[in-house]
Image (cartoon, rainbow, N blue to C red; front, side, top):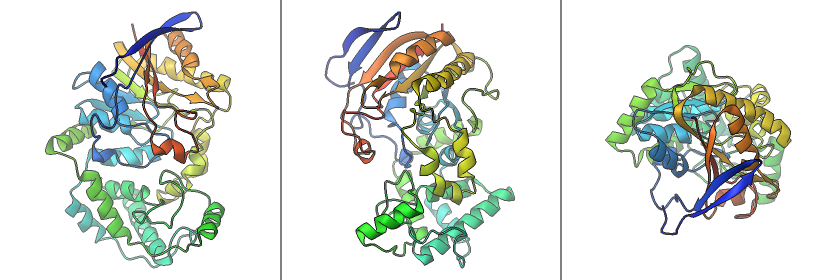
Length: 392
């Protein structure tokens, strides 16, 4: 916690009086997050957020859950802290990005495996010429074919899954560390037509990128801060981790009263377009982006959002142990006209939880919010507001 004093006050939310704490409870400067987290994904929170609650509210061996897993920040951080992991996300890309990091391979293992991938000779079945040099595209197609064939024949292992995860996150970006020509942030892929316009505006043509070199460079970066203890914790968590790809409103695979702590950030109304952002990643992994998009909650009204989240809270109440907690990260959306904690508190209470507090981590935003077109401390998804519930 920072040296500033915590400000405590009470706010009225409906008939409830809720304690609110405001301070800089965690910052990226206080503890450098593990390099294993450095996977690009839109609308993700920093590892320091789940670490704060996991360290405060659980003990080693406890079960930590995230019903909206995203890139797996909560799951990976829980594993690094010696906790057991359950994670769920309607988007199967979430599992692609999470599962591989429970079994990090050695750099030499990745290099040896990449050497076995046949050289590419064909282009993609869709037009990707606005993103990739023809030779780069052939390498991507060859790698995609190899990985999908390995998976279809049940021959894929932890090294293949690692390569798939890293490649998925190197498909597009704004530096030479990605496979593509300069494009929008690395956590999304614009449409083919939009990329053509970017190329015209920047007067750029895709140049060749050595995909194997990029994969090895990123692998080395992801592994750079992992200690032997970190690797052991990740491997141990991976052995028992339950990684689901379904609806957070209905998770029958999770037994009653087994989760000690949930730390999550739900989809916020219609701010983030997951289907449009992930179409290229889905193609690489042989997934149907359209079908996945229909499964992801993109409520356009607060009323509809509350209907869905109400059912999520009912499910969280079922799976949470007595005395367990839920840390539900919310935001100020639509030009600060909507504060979701004012809607979330009644939802949690209606499900049976007691609201312990609203915690506001007051910090300076990172460049990510500017990438989204959001001014610092102005609007948009706000990772600083967390409603904490306890199951009596």
